[in-house]
Length: 216
Ligand code: DC
Image (cartoon, rainbow, N blue to C red; front, side):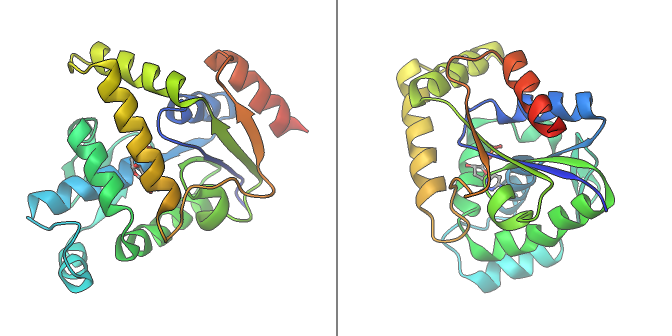
């Protein structure tokens, strides 16, 4: 039986960095599920599918999409999407398409299969609640909206993508509203997850805390 460390939390809480570093320290694979949703969003957009299209249109397009994630890169039908998914547009597409049940069902089994194959640190919005309800360890990583907006603002500038702090704040707020209020698999704190507020912690303090909780 493989061990899964499931981590959920809102956009910009530092989940990706935390999950990647934790996976390295634990010797586990890293499953970035946002990356799967981003790649599918970009793929559907390329095929002119809209998030408002009916289920049949989306299902037909997904039927011809073979997704593969290798622990760091994501491919659809052999094409590497990894460099295309870190844009505000890809984040938006992931956020709107991920509210659709057909897309969540399409990715559900792939994520579970990954967790059955490898010791995994899985990070996303519904890891602890839907995808891996029986995970070995469950964490909810959070930070204030202001801190998350500031992190996003700096990250975008570092990536050479001009954005104002106000735009970053609006984006974080909108994403929270969408991720937490959608009908299917909304972001919420699982009853049995350990809540970690990273607002006043460095990444390394968070990792040390998680590792000590994993050892308990
Ligand atoms: O973690 P991220 O910013 O890469 O995620 C992009 C979007 O994908 C996010 O707005 C919500 C969605 N998502 C989801 O609904 N479920 C997941 N397990 C992971 C991401």
